[in-house]
Length: 212
Image 1 (spheres, helix red, strand yellow):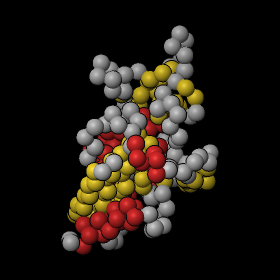
Image 2 (image 1 turned 45 degrees about the vertical axis):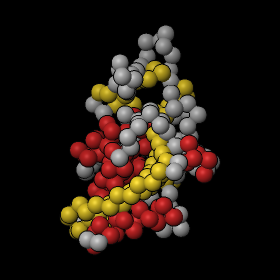
Image 3 (image 1 turned 90 degrees about the vertical axis):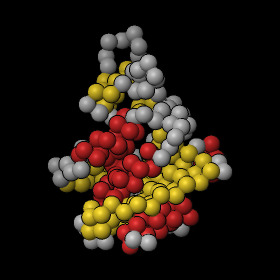
Image 4 (image 1 turned 45 degrees about the horizontal axis):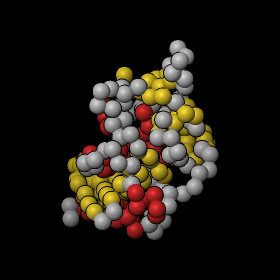
């Protein structure tokens, strides 16, 4: 596997699922050396898989400061031709208020849409829940998966190692779920930038809020 640009070995169980302890996975840089590390599952990817390329704020005792990841090539149409691509969005009328999620999944010729009301919730919960529902909708987790979200908050928690100060149970559940995908990549996209599937996810979330 790959961790922060370096090749590592990751411990797995008999079913080839990552071994988890307190929401983290065990990795070693060299098998013959005694040093081992417990790291967030979302920070470990298959060798050759780029990590998220986005500018995201990092948590620092409740205050944020700019943190810029290395610039990486954008996800190409060819990448989505070989991977399950998931577009997620959450919507909220008021914060908290009536909330909903929208999810669009594509894999080759297959296409699925999900629009679901959450009742009363915050916008951050809606963004996280959309990601959870999108991942749960994947039937074959062995395939490469690329999940797109415009939520800096959600992706900071799931791919940048942020510490959750709220919504801890939901965040932990998603992290455990993400660890069951051997080839999962999170990608930050700009909201309302004209991408058809991203815009569709937004429409589905708004429809769920409005009860359509």
